[in-house]
Length: 431
Ligand code: IMP
Image (cartoon, rainbow, N blue to C red; front, side):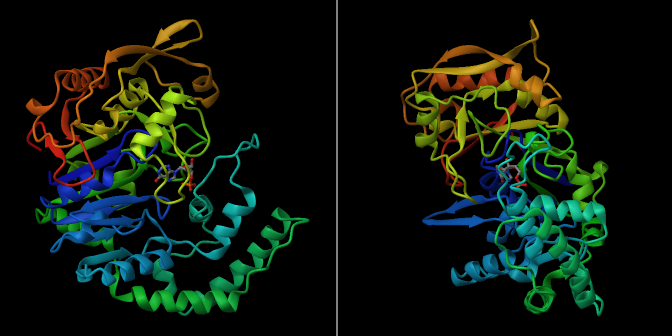
């Protein structure tokens, strides 16, 4: 088996980009397979910081092929913007980028719908989406009638598709925005704009399913880069406060087309505490001084939207669930340095729920809202750990914290990240 998979085990923003970037050195192909420009990954290389949304983190490593597979929803303007930005900064190995002709394309009507609905749940509560048109594009993909894939944009029927969809979408938007000022979409302009995008992306378009199957069958080493986190999975996360794709480990095969038997090792990335952006229950949230301290020390503001992230203690009930769901073999504990200086650390070990103590993660958000986290308190550490190169160099209290996390989640800690740079990573076990 030649695949390695990196999955976030919380609500996203677990610093997966850095781990993917590090593991890229040991792989031939890096694959993005779900989500879209709602993801944001930051990779720090020496003095340079790169913020990417759609391009796999692997584009920064020469010689590696980067694939945006069919399960991704593609904002072409954003891909082009990221390619241009990298070119400006002399990162130019784009022959190795392949974008699936099956990837569904995000159009202006998707942004308009995302904004118009404010993407609230059926109860009217705000999901707090990233506003990147992700949900509306996936909805059209599944609905089939108003969807356009990258491969469609090179065919004669493209213009008619746009005209037909714009007619319908203008009616939908008029109903959604009744009483509010809005500009109807103009098919001609959208077609002209997207025809330019299509030309720019033509060299990269490929049947990535076939490419990946050939690659894996010929023994190439594949790295699958999950976006968002497992608790935002549309089927298994905190529905409806989720994203619209399978962001847990279950999404790798369907998003990429590579069957499960080729997916070797799954690494779950766990932030040493918890954050969440947008709405939805968050049992260990600290809407207080402790949470503000985590936000300040961890610079917890969204890469894509700049929104302040909600912060709280590590919830091992949630992470144990998402690790099991994603078939995780080992975890990477990230942002551990952020906890330095905090006198006492809390870890949620179980929930009190309907009069009983449980380690089960509720399937309904109403139940998740009711749970009371049960905390264990552990002594923190005062030392700066950002220079530690091995587990032995970490203070005993830090090691105790890692051991307890591993025990509660039920899988070994294989990597520890103590700072944003590639070099600030401790490998505990051979990967
Ligand atoms: P959407 O993916 O834009 O539809 O947003 C749905 C939910 O997922 C919202 O709560 C977002 O804040 C959250 N979300 C989407 N992408 C990310 C991400 O990359 N990191 C963290 N949260 C995300």
